[in-house]
Length: 272
Image 1 (cartoon, one colour):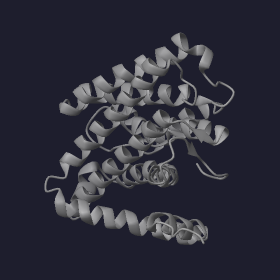
Image 2: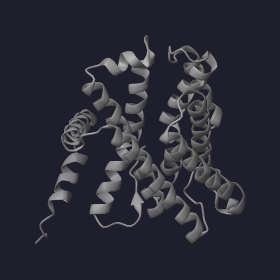
Image 3: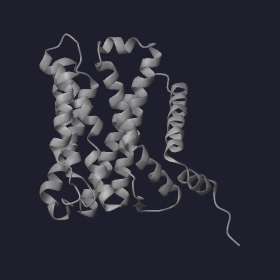
């Protein structure tokens, strides 16, 4: 006689059997429900952006703990860390010349820790770096973002170079996690600390996306006008949404693994 399955296992089994269109529809519905909940319980939606940066910092702290405790960078993408450092450096430059605020300080701290991670992977722990798995060329990610930024950027009164730089860091941030997802796709097995880090990125991306969407709703669309005219306001929102959906599939399997009591995350074919 089979033991009764727990509700979470039954729901996961049912969801896994659904066609891709149904899964996508359920993901959209879940995201909308989460936005409604956040709008109800968080009164100042600017706090969501701060929360997103805080969660990102927690993710990096987990990464640093992994590097210091386990003395290995296996499963980590050096290229994702380098892309993160690039967009943070560009965003810091934009903050200093365009709009200096508390986020500038947070970005500076995040950039410093990211550069430390890059240094550890590139030099101290090079022997454990899975270079053959980290096989996305950086120019495949950087060049398209730069080209789009040249064409679609803010229409503010700032110097055009600064406006293009701002757009570039927005686009690059949206896709900076792709090399890390490729590494996990190639290995299929994700050890706990790396899984925690990527899940933290997913949560941070969702909170950041929720911040922008709720701000647009709160201002009844006036925020889009404040961002400028043309395609730029739409591209900002699209970039935020892309960041969230890139990591949504992984986050689903992460939550399923945690509830299932598995320490090592095993990804089925086709994920990420």
